[in-house]
Length: 68
Picture 1 (cartoon, rainbow, N blue to C red):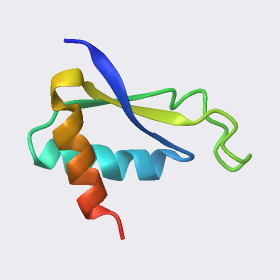
Picture 2: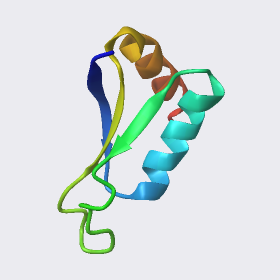
Picture 3: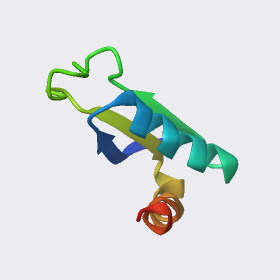
Picture 4: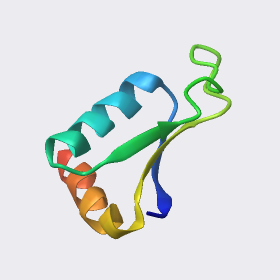
């Protein structure tokens, strides 16, 4: 399993919503850098959402379909 970056977020809420969407579709994902992000301070270090490289294309499609 090789993890690749799917997306970056400025707050843990957005990252959590995206992770939940992936979980609901059976795509395992991991949120990195939540303790490094300075939420409320402009999100200096963004939170990364990571997936297995084999799931990357499907995960991108899922999140792009869910975007407004």
